[in-house]
Image 1 (cartoon, rainbow, N blue to C red):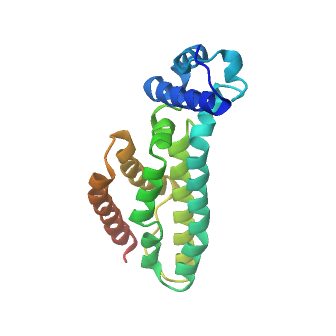
Image 2: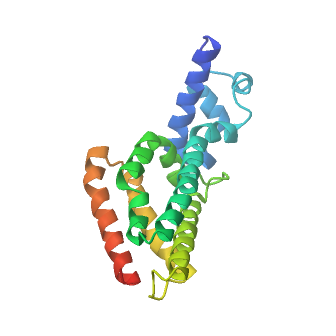
Length: 205
């Protein structure tokens, strides 16, 4: 077994956990193997984390918290855009650069969430993000219709869910395919333009 300070041991556990979760996924990662990879006993592990679930949460919870914060901050901005009649602003609020910043600050965590989270409370992360996008989109569009800014028939909730799923999934392709930020910067603007043009067409804007 390796020895060192508390901080050194903690770092080895983190490195081992990230490596094994990425290679095997949460379900197939054995805690004893994780400890062996880190050069620590299971007893030593439990002085740092309560469980395998605990260390997985350590890696991914900040990314989950931030995406929730992004949507929470976007809602009043969307409401203001609608109430002032600036409907087209709705497709500029969640701008491409902010999405890229989020993705590449949390790249490994998102990889865990999207590919390695079966068996954890995070296994529905993609669907959770899609639901947040769907909810804020429908609330904003219904408000715009109430104010008389939209006359076209709005997509139903299942339709909007499918549209949002296509959009969110396309953005997260950066993570699933290990695309560099330079490459994704070229792609993201095309993706946003594509879905924005589609939204304008459906809504008659």
